[in-house]
Image (cartoon, rainbow, N blue to C red; front, side, top):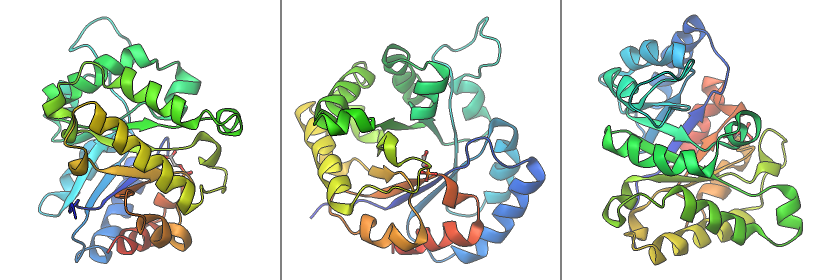
Length: 250
Ligand code: PGA
């Protein structure tokens, strides 16, 4: 059996000031001191450094929620991979459905962002997932395959195992409607198959489920063979709830 270290990420979205981020980390750290999992906090840009400074000496990693594919340039409002790496940020969320749907993030941009993140030493957390309409039309696998092929097109096969994939069905994000463990497992297993066909060491890739993960449903989702972790939105804003999800990973 492959052994993949569980990966539990808190996607705060546009929540938490610097003061609130500090309070969260101070409350979280004692509760997860014994975890063997990778615990990743994804604050807004403004709170990256305060979280980085508080987590030194712990197992917690820090991820940004977005970055631009270019190293520098006239891109008002954007930040580059090098700017994040300089802050000791270790990872970056790419292709979240809110960025795709609300901010026009394209597969073409993602095809450049994923290798740019890897080149800067950042671990990409690439989000993929289908709309409700696509699921109802039984196009889930087609959507996932298309996103994976497009977004990972420029990544060398040997580097694919350095990418974390988050399966996030759009109909389950922030809706309280979680995919069933069977639906989530089927999609994550399919993602692993697509990566294997791409030439990845697919058994080494961490594949997360995201979409209304809570303390009450985390253990069952995380118990599925191809689900290696969770990308948690709403329930990651409370340190007690997020700690409970981390503990559910074992
Ligand atoms: P949710 O968000 O847990 O609030 O559904 C998940 C995500 O968007 O990553």
